[in-house]
Length: 260
Image (cartoon, rainbow, N blue to C red; front, side, top):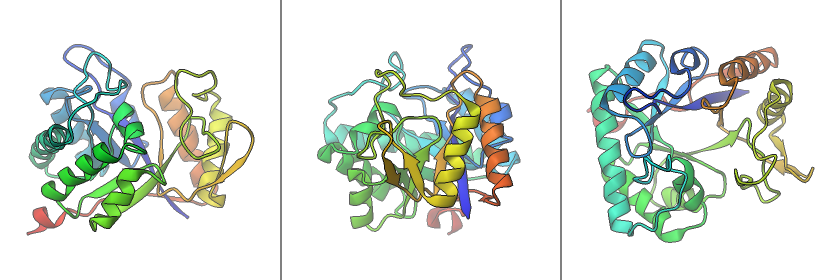
């Protein structure tokens, strides 16, 4: 039983802070670092990469629509070529700060509305994949099982990994319940911990209607911007350890470009 814990980090901006990145980077094994389009600025990106590198936490690019005001949670009907360019811009920016910290960008996980859109939106899914191919064809793509962009990534020969969400409710088809609906986010640490242990040990998730979804996640996402996030993450980590799971990054080796 090997499982990774990832969290969305580096989502502050200027004097505004979101979440306790320092504490979470002592719990999770992978950090999805905001790249400036939905959150994060150069100073925040560099600081997050430095702490992650010091603690052996794998760094991933948390790319998003250009939507600071909406925190990247609003759909943007951006042309595919422009979306590819936006992804490359963000990947390049994070790579520079990761290298300055003595580490690398090991994977990409789109954020918010983009993450959910490219589960089904064919053109935008292809646009994101094109960016990864042009950036580094050994970069790992992390996303929701069954997502269109992961299908295209596999067709392009890119490595892919699947994730599940610790505190998000699921629809019976395996998609996430919209944040606009009641019950979309779970808050009880004991309930969430039990869910994560079941994901890791039995490969199952209970959907919002009580049905059971088969899942074998490589990584579990622990949100860092909800109340009690650090305590929740610690409870999940302790529960997985107690269940005998090996909690470690799913992607840590430098990409081929950086090894050359």
